[in-house]
Amino acid sequence: MAYVETEHSGGTRFRLFPQLPSLEQQQEPETVWVSSPAGTVLPGPADHRMYVIDPVGKERAYGYYPGPGGSTFHYRPPWRGPVLPEAHPDPEGHFDHLEIGTYAFEQAHAFGAIRFTMDIWERYFERPLQWHFRDYYDRLEILFLRGLDNAFAGFGSIEIGSYTSKKTGTFVEFGLSFDILSHELGHLIIYNEIGLPGTLEVDGEYFGFHESAADMVALISLLHFDSATVGLMENSHGNLYSFNRLNRFGEVSDNWQLRSASNDKTLYDFKDGWTYEHSLSQVMTGALFDIWVDIFHENLLDAGLISRDLEELSDRLEGNPEYEAVIQPLFDEAYAKNRGGFADALIASRDYMGFAMAALWERLSIETLDFADVYETFVEVDHDMTQGRFHRIIHGNMRRRGIGVIKAGPRLKPPDKKSHAFSDRTATPMDACGCSRRLPYALRREAAGNS
Ligand SMILES: [Zn+2]
Image (cartoon, rainbow, N blue to C red; front, side, top):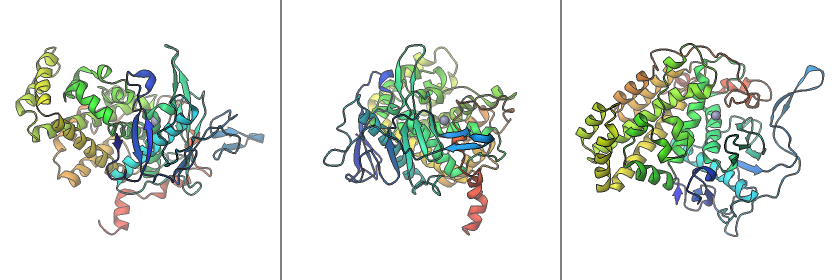
């Protein structure tokens, strides 16, 4: 059973699939607690931060559409039309009794996934998260638009589609994808913490950063499921190096966030320009993922769970075809001696990354944001958190990807409908006036009087 450590007592139970049930052998959802006290989550589900509805007859996504006489019409929440019946809590106020395969289960799953992710990140930010649309709406509207082959975090809403794979014909309900729901909340966190692009001139790398940050929200949140952390350890025996180097993710996990985190893209691949922010984002996500893995191994070393020799051997054999055959048995042996120690080291590295990302995003400002800025700010954050214990790891992994060395070239094509971070749906009803509400970090520190 998974929960966000400080929040579970008196909370409300939901059942979530850590990974899409259709893609994975594991078919049983895991029970989680969200912080809303049992009995306070109303049918929908709905609480004071968000509510789920399942519209009937909604034909298009929220966003900007052409209106009469060349005007623009902003179609936005709330949905006022008919809705499917809501998911109801059990007599104790929990939502873990709903039958898999029903609309009610999916509605509760969507709410639970987003609420669980929010609890996790409120712990890392050490404060409540705000909505960037709070001047217009108190609560997030989470709604289904089945047939929309995407999910969008928009102005006041997360809209959830579904998808039929052209290759396999498999039908995927995004409402059952923790990955996707958690990723979309990640976008909303970044909009609030850093700002909306809107009409503001921002560096192209902002868009790659935005996708990467949303992936980090999903990835770190995923590691709050017991089945995910146990599965990762039982399959790898702690040899996460092999994910970087041999890309064994397919064997360990069907989770696409994990797979896309383990990649070897660098900024050199994009020096002449880029088209999709998802591709550009892989450079930053890959660097952050490698940093996380290195810190995990540093924790294993410090706890005496693996030897310095093993780490050095692993470095020496990098890229060598013998790598797997030599290294894996050594990890198998070390892991068998102290599985609990390995799990603790994994959780400690997860929490380091969670707290570091929250502190990092708090300090970035949209006007100056590019990958090099993220790198420099991460170094500052690590200095404040650990007196620079991981500086060597951060420098090495960032520079290996070209971050802080070169910049990505220009965007080569205008954003299309696949774009998450830059779409009509994210603009404010007025224009982009809300985006500079947050002062740059240096100015905020000054304003707070602690320079
Ligand atoms: Zn996205």
